[in-house]
Image 1 (cartoon, one colour):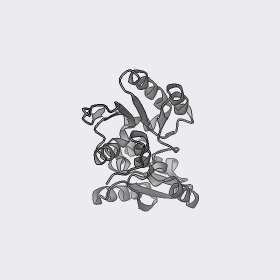
Image 2 (cartoon, rainbow, N blue to C red):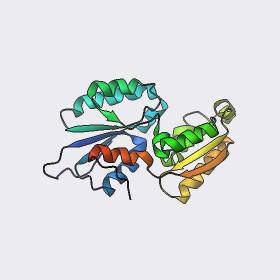
Image 3 (cartoon, one colour):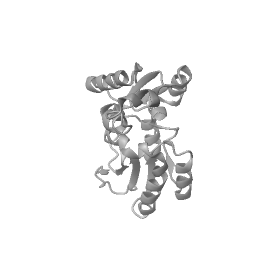
Image 4 (tube, rainbow, N blue to C red):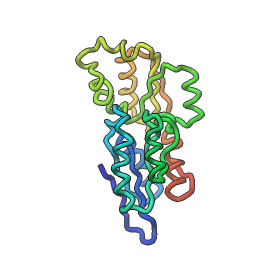
Length: 213
């Protein structure tokens, strides 16, 4: 899925952000807010989150073509469960990515995420995307729609759901709370906006750490 911001500003490098589909709205919002008219965004399927071992190969395949199409490329993924294999691919291409282990960390910020992790290891995290697509990305994928008795098998070691919201949206908040109820877990909401993701994108695109308005 490609989401292009008009690439017509003369003299600017052609920049691609190759990102996880779960970050499409957030990266687009940051790009528009900062008037990055020379930036294109292309997203790989968000469903790769369910098979993280496939992320490095998918990114590698796209980067092989991107070298001849763009002056600069940035990867909008954290490690995302690849166990360092994504970094091996990026090092070979000379490309950087978002820092951290996963999107929960760079949205929350490393300090807050470390605090949440220390408070309760058994935490299941939601972002805006996951709150909106909980049924498709979690409930149905794990077969809980067909075998609800598996809930305790999957989530028996969890104690709470923490919803790390990017925008203030009452509908998404209710969806996140409902997900916690269905999982039989306590619910906590932290509004974190775009966190370190926006700062790192700003540093890559134009060298200055700027956030979405």
